[in-house]
Amino acid sequence: MKTILTMKPMKLAIACALAWGVLSGVASAQTNPADTGYLTDQRSAVARSGFGLCWHTGMGPAVYTAECDPSRVPAPLAQADVPASTTRPAGGRVTLDADTLFDFNKADLRPAGKMALDDFLEKMKGITPEVIIAVGHADRIGSDAYNQNLSERRATSVKTYMLGKGIAANRIHTEGRGEKQPVTKAGDCLGAKSAKVIACLQPDRRVDIEMVGTRVEK
Image (cartoon, rainbow, N blue to C red; front, side):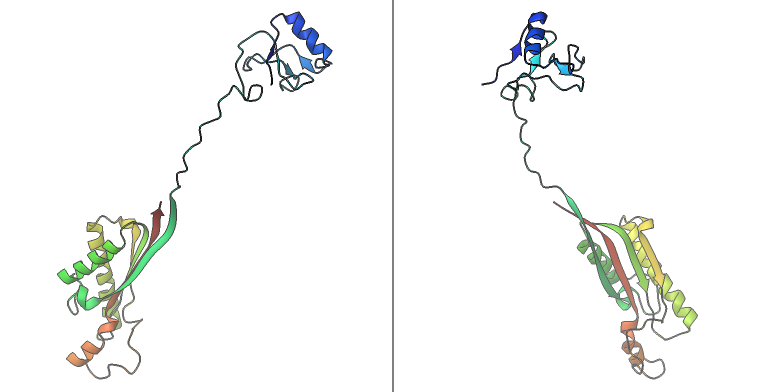
């Protein structure tokens, strides 16, 4: 069993220390005010006897320390393991039928279009958005310039609606690509403008929406 060697008479403490060779030019009788009353050497390490016991100066507070009195210092309470929350990249992508979002040749959202956007946002709940990209497309009916403008206005309508749902403006990027990226293949939907051709070109009239963000997992 270890015992604290607390020799209150200073002369006795020094004599014992010399007997064990502790004070042979290494130990110092002065202690740092921040110490707990134990004798320290020139390296500020606690001086020990030949049996490994800490020497006390006999002055200052006799405060137990984990170094010198491990049996008297209670071990720190173990903290309960709490799983740390982690963030993971997350997101989603959807292609919406432009004819569902808008009337033909229009850029104002229809009620069915708003419902489609609500459904997308509902599925993306739990994701903190970094960016939402809305890209409008048009079919080949009309001039390139007209279709480019139409696709841009449709993407802007999607952004405006999302702003009303609380999405920050700087998180939403819009782009219009006109008729440059059709889904239909060359040779499909041949002929002049007609109800049949308009219906055939329906896949080209679309809005691609993509959300990229992070999801917090516990």
